[in-house]
Image (cartoon, rainbow, N blue to C red; front, top):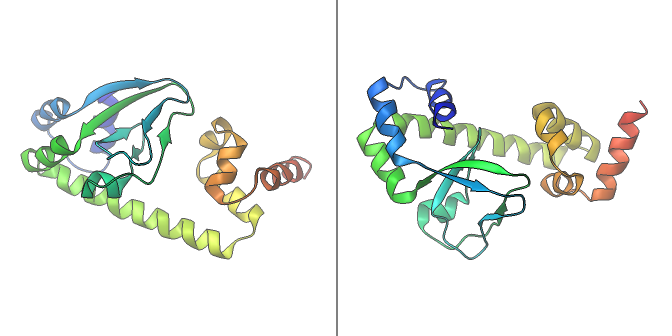
Length: 168
C-alpha cells in the first residue's frame, strides 16, 4: 500500500528517497470489510483514507467539526489513514507534501466545479455517460443505486439509461 501511495505522490511532486522513508511513519493501515463504516455522520473525521483517491469529510477533518457524511466501504478495502495531527506534522516535516496537497485540492475543486456544471446543465443520460467515461472501472464495481445517488438520479432512471445504452 505504501508503495502505491509513494508512486502516486511522485506523479505530482518530486519526493526524495529520504522523504519517502519518513512519509511512511505518518500513515497506518486499516482494513474495512464491505459495508463497514470509516466515518459516521455526527463523528469528527479524524483520518484521510487512500485508495487512488483521498476520502474524507474534508470540513470535519480540517475544521474538527462533526461530519455531515457517512463513509462506508462498498467492497473489502485496504486503506492507509493519516490522522489530522500527523497530516499537520507531515506538511511541516516534508515541505513538498504541502505542494502535493495543494495540487490535490486544486484538482478536487476543478472536479467539483465540473460535476456541478454537469449536474446543472446535463440530461440524466449525459450525467450518466460522463461518469462512466471518466471512471469506467468504478462504474462497473459500484451498485446502480449508489451511482444514482451520486448523480442525483433515481435508481429507476439509471436502469432505464443503462437499458437504452445496451440496445443502441
